[in-house]
Structures are given as structure tokens and as C-alpha cells.
Image: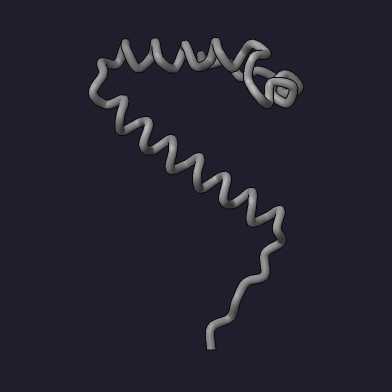
Length: 71
């Protein structure tokens, strides 16, 4: 007999979001492979600039979190 795992609706939604985000990131990375390293860096820099301002949904949550900078 197979045991089923009970999952709360919140946990299920979080898991679905995480899986969708991972699949989207994988597809995006695969699409970006046709560009040079410099072009990919420019793309990610543009994304970072967009999300560092308050124009996107969820900006309030992002503003509450400390910024992480790459060395």
C-alpha cells in the first residue's frame, strides 16, 4: 500500500511556485546560451536594475530584504 503525504495548501502553493521558478530559470538559462558572456551579464544587470526600483509587483517585499552584492 502506498502512503500518501498530506500537504497543507500553503505548502503546496510554495512548492508549486518553487518548481515553476526552477523550470523557468532553467528555460531562461538555456535560451541565454546563444549569447556571449558579456551579453548575458548585460541581461542580468538589466534585470537587477529593473527589480531594484519599485515598478514591479513585490517591490515592497524586496525593499524590506537587505541587498546582496557580488564581489
